[in-house]
Each structure stands twice: as structure tokens, then as C-alpha cells.
Image 1 (tube, rainbow, N blue to C red):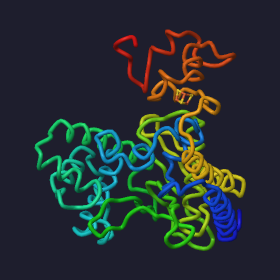
Image 2: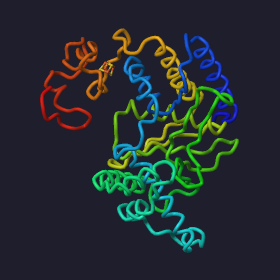
Image 3: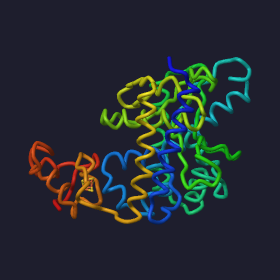
Length: 338
Ligand code: SF4
């Protein structure tokens, strides 16, 4: 087992030094740089695409039915646990009833007020607007998330599990790290839950839940980034990151060691480096990095390397045929050939 506090201190020093150096080398201030797992994955996957996103792509895109499912599900589960505690479940020492995912989500969404913060306010606004279609889509995603979470982690939930990133009126938000007060850089931990308390022994485990299984490389990248972001935010490295998938029931435990933390720190630094490069240039074919992500990249039509990969003409890469490349995009069949 690693020295959890010492490893977090070393990571903090390394990331601070490297990001300071990157920011000082900028020809103009790049503005606020927030690093979460989306930005880190984007910068690691294709720097050219990350830089080309500009201000709209670098910040939080705003809530939508596509990205609100997890946040709604965590809030609904948090409410279910709280309500059960208040009525003699958890607090009274009895067993907490298994949540009905659809009903728990419905009850929580009906109580969301438009003037609240975060996803609660977004749901409240949709209700005020009578936007039933968006609410139905978000509720479906949240129900699926919650059902999968309970399925994989079991019920009752593991001892000492704490939900993280829960939308509450008390303003308790995601754990974040800044190199110093007023810094342009902030790093957010996106873990969904933690098992165990954060102590100097570093025995806690961060949980990242996904409704569906994905590419193994993405899974490992996510664990790498969350290990580092969690170590920075809590000043203690976790013992492991547990990645779960609701549809397949997978539980992948990635043990945290110094190498993993270093790799996660490098992902954070790379985001800052790419933001600094973006001050001078956005998309550049020279460092476009084709991968399956090209299928849903908004630049795919103008990007020669991405086009070559998608058409199968890049040496040894890409789908076997252009038809195969076009057959599916972002998990959905392409209805019109473009
Ligand atoms: S099409 Fe592919 S290679 Fe080109 S910018 Fe997009 S992700 Fe990068």
C-alpha cells in the first residue's frame, strides 16, 4: 500500500509546478481552466479537437436530458436514504427499503424547485416550462442510472458508502482542488460515491458508475484521472477506483499507486498545456489523433486525418470499410448517408 498522504503531496507539487510552467509560457492568459474527466479525456484523445472546441466546449455545456441522468439519480437516491433514515430506516437501525428507481426519480423531480441550484433548478425550470419530453428523457436516464447503481453495488449499499456530487440545497458540491487562491486552474473530482472515510491511511475507494459498459481504454483513463483528482481534492490518495457498469454488472477495481497518480496528474497538466496552445491555434491537422471518437466528432468532415481513418485509408487503422465507418455513429444508426 502506498503512503496516501505523501503520494498526494508529491502529486500536488508536481501538478502545481508543471501547470505553473505551462501557464507562464502562454502568450496571453488562457482564462479559467477547469479540468474534469471530460476535458481530460478530450485532451488525451485528440488535442486538435479539444483545442478547436473553444469557450463553448471547454466549459460546462449546461444541463440536458443527455447529461443530467446521473445527477438526478444521485439526488433521488440521497433523498431516499435520507427519508428512510428520518422514518426509522437507517437512523433507527432498521433496514432501508430498496428504492424503486422510477418512483424515487419521479418523487424527487416533482419536488425540484426552479430557483434551486444545479440540476435541481434545471429540472424545476423544465417543470415550470411544461417541457414534458425533456423531463421524460431525463427521468428515463436517471432511472436507468439508479437501477444499475443498486444492481452493481448491491442492496443494502456497502457499509460506509457516501454519495458524492449530490445536488443539495446546502450547496455541498463536487470536491475541487486549486493550486492556490485565485488560480486560473481548478480540478474537479467527478466520482459518484466513496466507500470509507478519508483518513491519512488512504483506505477509501472512489466509485465511478456508468449506466453502460464502454471501451476499456476510456474506463482506465477515467480511473486514472479520478484517482489523481480525488488525491488532489482530498489531499489523500484513494486506495482504489471502482468502475461499475449498470448494464453488464461489471465491477472493475483499479488499484491506485504512484504510477497511476503520476499518469492522472499528467492528464491534468495536458489539459492546461492544450489550453495554452489554444491561445495561438485551435484545430491543427498535425496533431489530430484519429480514433473511434472521430465517428461523433463535429470536425470529422473537415479533418483530413479523421476522414482518412473513417474511410479506412489510413494505414492499418480505422474501420475495415467506409460503409462500416458510417454504419454507426455515437451508438446510433446513421439514418441518412452524409
Ligand atoms: S475527426 Fe478525429 S482526428 Fe479529426 S479532430 Fe475529430 S477526433 Fe480528432
